[in-house]
Amino acid sequence: QVQLVESGGGWVQAGGSLRLSCAASGSIFSIGFMGWYRQAPGKQRELVAGITSGGSTSVAESVKGRFTISRDNAKNTVYLEMDSLKPEDTAVYYCSAQVRLTHTNYWGQGTQVTVSS
Image 1 (cartoon, rainbow, N blue to C red):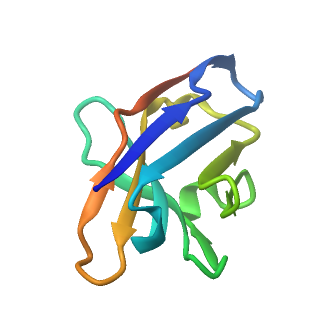
Image 2 (image 1 turned 45 degrees about the vertical axis):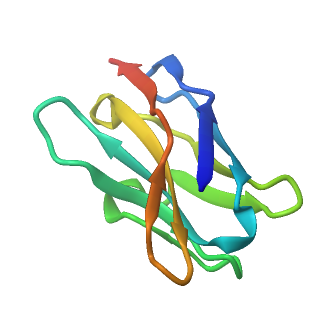
């Protein structure tokens, strides 16, 4: 079992920045890929950025150049630095961790990000 706790969401004006954190606990040795997803009202959940246990990263085209994902394995925490935020970035952001062997995905409770124009 893996538990994930997100923090750092909130309200910001367009052009501003936020940093999301996701702390993992439990069977952390089993975690491989970790990612940040978001879901806006009426839309499907989408992958925003991901990072492997080795540190390889990927980000969605819609946030490329503005969002950065990083991982501190010593703290079992993954971060999402969000700069130049736009109103269309408004969504609930979820952290996810995937177990290497089983590919089971665990999810955090989500944190709201609201960007006003």
